[in-house]
Image (tube, rainbow, N blue to C red; front, side, top):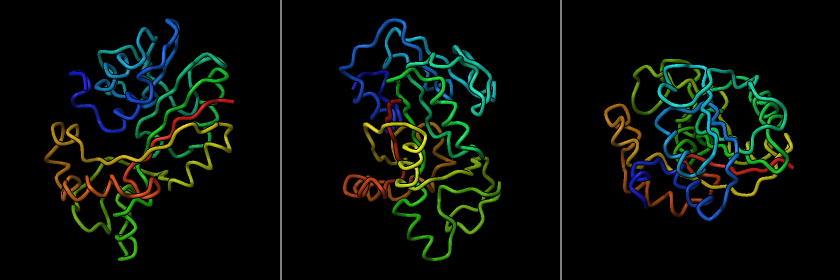
Length: 232
């Protein structure tokens, strides 16, 4: 894999492979909703010659790149003006997911793509912890990590709208999207090791076991899930 992809999270590696042989027009317009500056170079390389803007409500997350400070519930774009919308691990932070998906459908051109990734509420590990009375790993109803089997430290993850694989798949269809690809992935790649190992030490525990399980588990039990959809 090319040097600039070396530390890409696994979910972005999926996008890289999917779009590898697709030719894009020079005037293609892309917005990454909830995006962060560290993803910009990768998106820029995938969608060559594309006009890319990150949109985030927090200005500090989008410093140094082409960006818009904006709200996911009221996207600052005219109807049918974008070719691609990406949203990586952002939808779980939203309170009103339906408004975000409705807005995404509105601003996409017919045939445009929505690429969305998010943690899986019913991943393999959460199913076990739930049976034991613990909170699923990807759900954070409070800044305090309550009823989790490992770390009790405070968190600012704020996951409010966490879906199962089947649930998100059905919701995307309800909002008019045609799903052309669905994938699962793990949060065990080098991106997390190298960027925030101390905070992620419990998440990356049993690295080899998680890596093996990621290869054999069905998509509905993966740690993360990614959908590529078209507006029809």
